[in-house]
Length: 152
Image 1: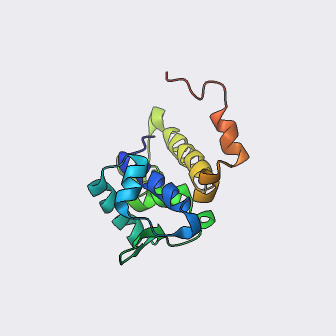
Image 2 (image 1 turned 90 degrees about the horizontal axis):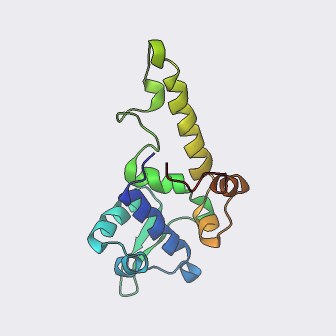
């Protein structure tokens, strides 16, 4: 699986918003500086997040962006889907729409298992748990599995 720069930036920007005291609006420039994200790229990402109902824009002198819902109600999967679409695709198709024959027949089960695995992490990590550093136990366990940090 590949996490795009757009998805990475979107999650990081939303984490900054989740960490904002009292949910105060944060200008895009401040979000960009806080996470070292190109401002113009971030503004497009924030537009995608706004259309998905994850962030809201606030106009005025003390305006900016804020989360549209509580951080506990926004999963990383939602953020990524808002900017990149489905979490796992194969040749731009969702696994259930694929079929394989012969020696590759079991490959569909592998793609579906991959999608389930990705969902089991990204659907269960919320912006609140990310910012608090309190990830679900099964996510922490995966990150500490032998070989998890190796790059084969």
